[in-house]
Image 1 (cartoon, rainbow, N blue to C red):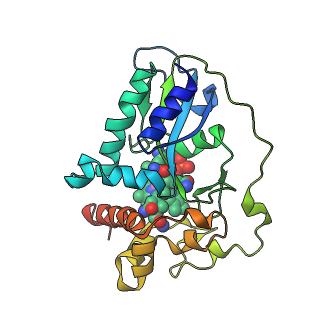
Image 2: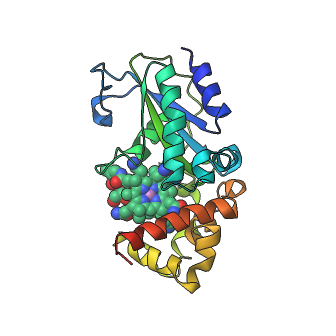
Length: 234
Ligand code: B12
């Protein structure tokens, strides 16, 4: 199976090929369930809303309003693409313990940790997500490396992402205070975060053209808040 066939299958379903790497022991990539070693890992995700959101909105999972619709649709769609390629898929929601998807993604393409914890690309900022990793038992030839890129945060003097959060959810001392964040997003004062996406994320000047559409942002923020409520955390 050629890499082009896999990337075509992914893009025909609304997903974006996010790069490929050959794992080493430090990457903590498991073997396949058949016992074969994983020799290549293909990262799958989305950038902004784009085709991904439109494809998801047409899915049975979205239309039937099942629980965890995006995760379920992703599993139903990417699982068979991985199997057709002779491999199997892992998902970021598998866990806890969770697989280190951000670390794997940064092995597959130029991604860097940002001051607010999300990983950033110089092309699409933080407006991307990871949806699956396809593990393959063969060492697929890696595409030619692109020219060296460094983190856009290194040349960002103002760091507006760290100044704008009304509840100071991101701080050097406390890391990401996700409960303060959730409390705010669930309150009237947090309507902007709840309907347009995290203010700190939106303050970043990088990749603004990939900002999520309002309905897509609302979907993720509602899921974040509803889960905190279900867990009795807020
Ligand atoms: C657990 C988790 C959370 C927890 C974090 C709990 C905490 N302690 O901070 C909660 C539920 C709060 C959360 C929230 C969100 N998350 Co989250 N989360 C994960 C998950 C499933 C596992 C992380 C993990 O344990 N990794 C393994 C350990 C070993 O690695 P680690 O580096 O120590 O992991 C830490 C960070 O990933 C951090 N973290 C996770 N999410 C977020 C989000 C923010 C804003 C920050 C600062 C930190 C953070 O928490 C982890 C534990 O301390 C990953 C998926 C994955 N498998 O990686 C997604 C993931 C990291 N989350 C992601 C996102 C986008 C979000 C949200 C922004 C989603 C949304 N609503 O739009 C929200 C944040 C709300 C906001 N301000 O907008 C993306 C990040 C993509 C990127 N660009 O880097 C991931 C990769 C999922 C995905 N499908 O792409 N998340």
